[in-house]
Length: 413
Image: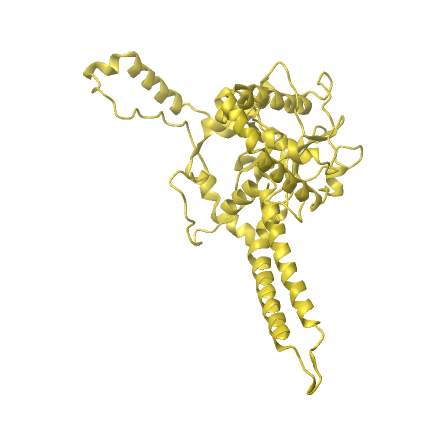
């Protein structure tokens, strides 16, 4: 459940002296993707425009009033349950080993009628063996396995995000090993639902993606959040984003009231996420595929059971008092999260890695055509393509800075 957030946070705080991780040929390092000022300005401008004529929220929404809207957050909610099943299986193995060790230690000694009472050495040896084996498994699990298990159990039941319309702030609630609680400015948000140019895989199978560059996080690294359910298409993602945007910019008036979801771990909350973002696939699939889905339905049942156990073994997330009271009359506004709010060793790591997230000035260069079949003509400079390239060069030279772009769109607003 928290695997993506945990991996992203490890990428943010990893040191250059750390041992390189093994990567697959298809893996992409997000730090290798450069960001340009023109991209930042365009994404901020698009996030302030209307994205859909039919705003709607598909949930899960936990709080909705005139001040706050709280939603489920995080990537991979539909995959939750597998780590729980493996962790509980390991728990059962360790518990059985400890119980067996205690049982053999309490075996009544064998009483010989001639020599008197003697000790059952086989039971004693088996008890010591099981005790040492269980202790070894327990120590190894606490050091290596527990951090992985806490991605699904013995932690907050959900990652949540809260939008406060009165303070114009966004709050992210995450465990400390995934980045912790963060307060961000609404003005600096970019969204995958702003338009089709910012869409991720057409919105299929991905939740709404929100992003804050390091220009707004004040912590030398960008923040991101996956909000709501996985989408079936980009229209659903745009409608979700438009619902959030109108709530923050205009208020809840005129918006359809979303269905409020309880934090209580009901069983159906564990089985429905498995089918998020797959409605289009089920509708268009052939009869053979539908038959195959019916045959593997026990696997969905087992995964859903693990998801429910995960919910039962977690606790309801709770905001600090200053965030719960934010926006009420006479209550202070929570300060934005800065680098100084992090522990000293985390601050050092973030400073070392600040160059990985630096925004490059100017405009993103145009992509070069790959393997052209014919050589360009000598008079290509007079062709429309040549004129277009000159226009792009002039545009890149006149690209405003990020600060100028933000001031411009603030004045237009």
